[in-house]
Length: 304
Image (cartoon, rainbow, N blue to C red; front, side, top):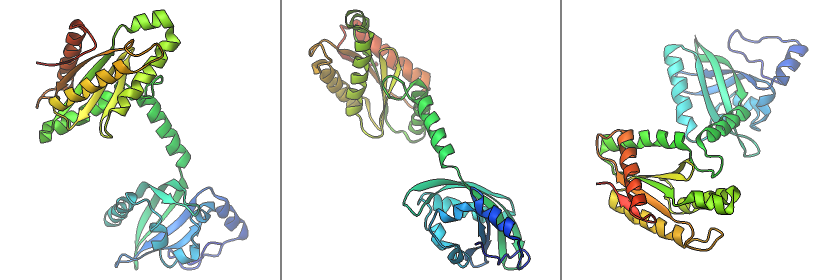
């Protein structure tokens, strides 16, 4: 049962039905007290969520540290900063964090609390709710909005977002950045001869070959149809050309189901120039791809 050592007025007698009700709540009702020396404890905890951590609530009534130690490492300083801001300004505490449970799984918690200055420091009264399902659904929807259905690669929307981020970094710090545009040669003939199902498989296999050639910080995206793009941070044009040449050769040598050499790609590359906008970078890569197509296909061309 919850502790009755409630700071906001001493002992608070409660009827059995109220205690039973609070214990069934799908979350945690709490009081968190922070002393001037920074020591924190939970004078009051109630709700079904108190059992998730496996920490005895009577221990937490003395010291909040066992619960704080369950926080995901990146979330600890963020929560401490939020508590400090709330205490200083006497404004509501509202944040989310990840918490390791008794079974070593991790859940997302939403915390909302109202602070009040008391003689012994600051007292928050609030509610914590498990929002893991909501966060998982939001992550699923994010992946759907950023992912190409057929290949599992990033889509055009995701590419444009990353391009803006990387161009901003390149402009601020003078970091090299290259963009590669790739297009399957004679893809219509593949669809017409072998069918669209086989054509889709070619696109999926091509996506896999592109991903195999990337570093963790690189991004490969399907722009639509048979056109792909590869964003290469911290990569000058000469290194981008070497990668493009290797990729062009590995695709030509790969057996997509009709023997090596039947599927080839044309690739255009360019390097970001400080001050260039996103559209200018894309246009230069497109122009290089166009030159590779008209230069005989199955080759790499760089911008002037």
